[in-house]
Amino acid sequence: MEKLLIKGGKSLSGKISCSGAKNAALPMIAATILSDEKVILKNLPYLQDITTMFELLGSMGSEILLDENMDFTICSSNLQDIEARYELVKTMRASILVLGPLLAKYGKARIALPGGCAIGSRPVNFHLDALKQLGATISLRNGYIEASAEKLKGTNIKFDGITVTGTENLMMAASLATGTTILTNVAKEPEIADLADMLNSMGSDIQGAGTDKIIINGVDKLTGTTFDIPADRIEAGTYLAAAAVTKGNITIEGINPNRLMRVIEKLQNSGANIDCQENSISINMSLESPHPVDITTAPFPEFPTDMQAQFSVINAISSGTSNIYETVFENRFMHILELNRMGCDIEVKGNHAKINGVKSLYGAQVMATDLRASASLILAGLCANGETVVDRIYHIDRGYERIEEKLNYLGADIIRLPS
View 1 (tube, rainbow, N blue to C red):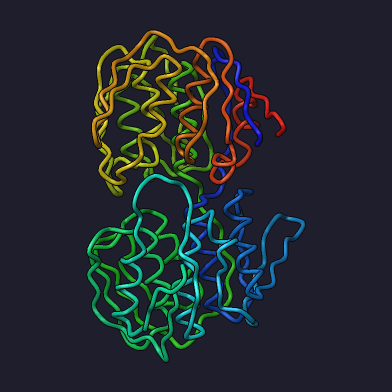
View 2: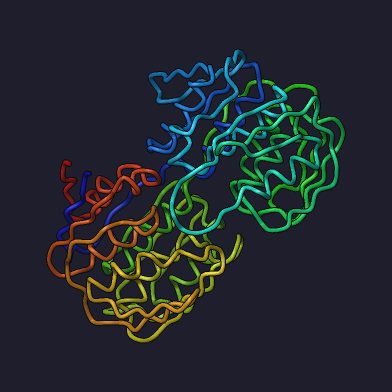
């Protein structure tokens, strides 16, 4: 497996552009199944999860073309296979997003139960129970979800728990259902509104995305469209955190600050100077040690769970004691053991991490356990004394486009080591 060798102690400075958001792109790729016409997606990030989703659609019969502008044209008018096989699904939970479109368009689907990062329970029962309310017949057999429906019918659905992919799956399925579907207790992440914008550009009638209630009036068919993938707010937040731990001064261009307000607030509380423009965020951290900041993760618009690991590093080198409460996933402190090997003083009890700030970290060999844990170990390596080797970086390649290249452009010293 490839590794990253990080020589710590470099202060980051300069400007970088934000890549397209993986969490917006994956449901949009799945949504192309709903149309018989060509869909052009721009600003797709070059990530392993994107490649996996394209492999999945290609295995079912979608035609996918890359042009000279690095835009992807997808045509799913002639799908021959409605099965998402285990070998393609096992590495990525987002593969469940093809279930709703396949069921709405073709009346049947066979999807392997998905895999992905081992960060806790992310049950698919919310998806399945909601699809049943639309009229689908669903069974679990030999590790596969088998679903069928003559025609989905709109109804009122209240999710038992907030689920981003569940909300997205039902939005796509209900777009071709008969009648009106009203979804309540839904996720409000910006990527939900992004997907609604794309579907509406294809002819859907979706209102309220980004609020507690989404109303979908079903239509007979969807057309093609051309759509730009918005910037990745978690990537932007990660680089802001990297500047905070290295006493850096950087600007991230192409990102809407409104999507990161809780992260920005916590960075300001840590002592960073933040300047927000319409389409950029600048950070200047001049303190010797950040101020400790308490964090409780929660669904948008509160502090994102995907930034918890990065802030663990900020707090680890802070001037005092802080507390992090993880309320979204029950198994998302696996990076803590590795951070403690680098000199952090962090104690975990259940969903609570108590962090006592230390003056400095030291390089070590560490192993990534999931995507955002990988990012936290890289951040720790950037501010540590000596060299850090991060193993199992295939996790990082699932969610960050050329992370070592962007950080090196800002002044880091990172080398990718071959297997």
